Image (cartoon, rainbow, N blue to C red; front, side, top):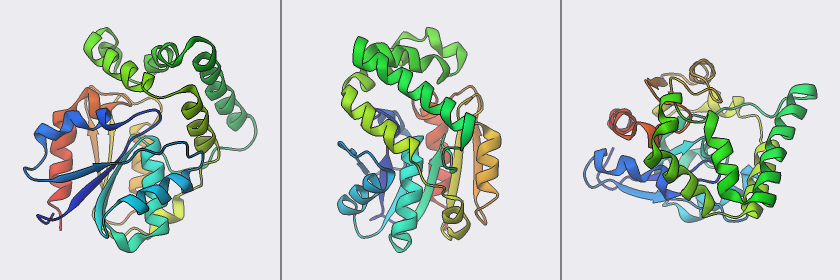
Length: 239
């Protein structure tokens, strides 16, 4: 990491700066950060284009969940601009064909219906049940922070991001071509994007490192910010 290096941070589904801000007190002093908002974009490529339009000429890049998908697309589109990349609680494959893909779409659209009929906060309360470590479901401060973050966005934004995820590209070849310091990270209890899934991705990137954070689910940056920041610090200091 150089003193002028900027860390561009890409939030996941319905997330914003608050998914990353718990890390800030634990990151290296003086690190410049930039969090990207995707607006109404409904495709991963359109989100990646927004990143490239707003980021400096060269930058470090980290993406969480859907943001990891966007990060991989940024690397595909402009690999020469990315100094290093961290992919958290994410995946690299396209939506599967057949029954599995149809089931994924049905689950996502069911949540969208809740957001449209009962409100985004109600949807967030349902969504979060499987997205944090089971012991944290009774952590009112954490759950309220996640639900409040989601509720800042509209059901229309949720619909657009669902479409982006359902039409996500396969990033296998992107991973195979990465030639910069790469970190994969996930919560040990992430049931949506498992440690095994991250190991498969890590195996595609020469020299990549996998860190698994104990006692955390899919929302690892908010559940265990100090541990995640320690992993980031090691990654940022890799040459």
